[in-house]
Image (tube, rainbow, N blue to C red):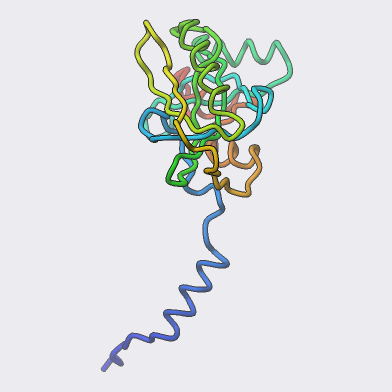
Length: 200
C-alpha cells in the first residue's frame, strides 16, 4: 500500500521562496516587442537620439512559421551581400526603442527609420520625431495613423514628476533576450537556410 502524500506547508513555502530568489527569470523575461499604440502613455529610455540603438534587420520565418525580424550583424561587406541575397534582399534599418508605459510595463518598439523595401520615408521620419519627443523622461502617446500621416505623437499634459522604473539590464542584454536566436552573423543561420529551401 502506498503512503498517502500530504501537503507540507513549510516545504512549499521554502520552495516558493527559493525559486523566486534563485531560479526566477532575469529582469528581461517579460520584455517583448510591442507597438506603442496599444501601450497607453509611455516614455523612452535615453536622453537624445544618440542613445537609440539602430540595427539592420530582415524579416524571415521563425521555426514556428511566424514572420519575425532578425538582426543582421556582420562587418564583411561581401558576406553582408550574400546574407541579404539569401534573405531575398528584404531589409530595413530599425530603431530598437526601449519603452516603459504608465503602468510599469517595459517593452521594445522597433520602427523602421530608413526607407527600404516597403517602408515609406514618412513612416521613418515620423517614427524618429515620435522617439525624440518621448526621450528625456517625457511621457507621450504614439499612434500609427496610416501611410499618409505616419506616427502621431503627443505629450502628456502633466507628468513632469512621474519616473519610469527600468529593469537593471543593459540595453545589450535586453536586445539579446528579445532577439534570442534571431541575430544573424553568418550564412548558416537556420532562418536563412529555411528561406532558401535548404534543409535545416
